[in-house]
Image (tube, rainbow, N blue to C red; front, side):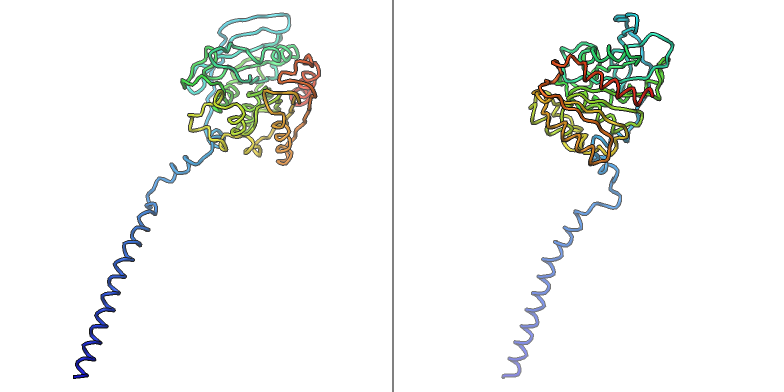
Length: 327
């Protein structure tokens, strides 16, 4: 009686172990299959993944810019030293307007691209924010070109947003730069850039994309960090809906390594339109990257350097431009 009982118990235990093993294996197997399912298939579109993670600045560097004819639309004014014209050109299939000051004489003349600061797009007129500097430079034998940017004044727009602070403005400036060669009296081998306020931010992005610039001058630039500008100005300036305006990817501060041109940076310490600390941070960041930068502070000066009468700052600017474009 004992032997059959022992055999039965042994068989029962063996059967129990076998069933337990099979059940355990069934529980593990589906988990293993689920892990395999979340792995990307071998034929996944890797290019689209890269595109989705590439920054705005890197996209600007990777794309092409198309030269177009810079057309004279209207003569606005003239004097003994230069003629002022309303111009137009094409940028990403948009007709963009701007202003050109052309010195009298045969040329070819060195060229300064002027980048204006923030304006509400609906109230902007061609030449706003650049006309005084354009006059000074033209009187010093520089051909000046000031883009209105897309959506400003008569320029065509690719967005219904009227807030005039968009990283895409750099595209319009870059398309203007490659079009300089089509101006008979312009020397496309001697191109400099000046930017004030938001125009300084645009100038930085532009200098990080092209090597056609020989020199850059920044007056009281907005922050080189997109997040700083969003926090400082709120939603009144920035187009928050664009997928290209990610704070890190569109921030020039993160791509200063690409700048190959000397920079002259000027900041009023009583400026309330931008934070003066932004210029100090930019200067230090440029130095860390080993870039050539000169930096001037102006105690008591506001955003537009009104108390200076522009004498000191404009003389320093012209001298800096002359050093790299005329000597």
